[in-house]
Amino acid sequence: MKAETRRKLEAMYQEYTQKRMDGGLALTLDDHIHCALQAAKLGATPSEIANALGVPIHYVTALHDAIAEKSYLREGSPANLQR
Image 1 (tube, rainbow, N blue to C red):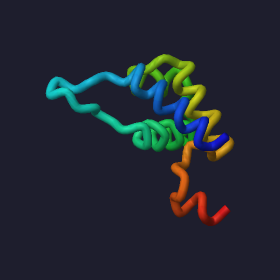
Image 2: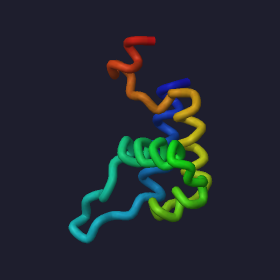
Image 3: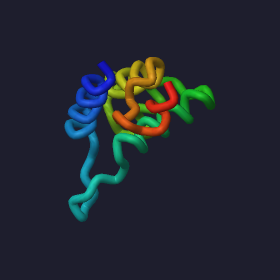
Image 4: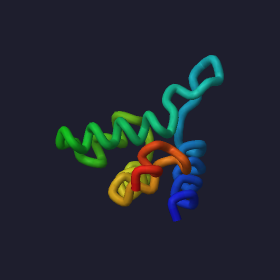
């Protein structure tokens, strides 16, 4: 399930993130996860987070769902090894 959730988030990330003028991506998926987590801790709504990241609200909802189940972590990351 964790790898599947990560793949879904990566697909949504590729679809919804904006490219920089030089062709690169402004933020990584892990940056989006971190931003969503920190903003939620500070009391931001999913709508506010979506507006700040420039993505649809259902993408932010998927990020929050993954954060809640901790399935956003990459396989083999230190956090996964401690579980």
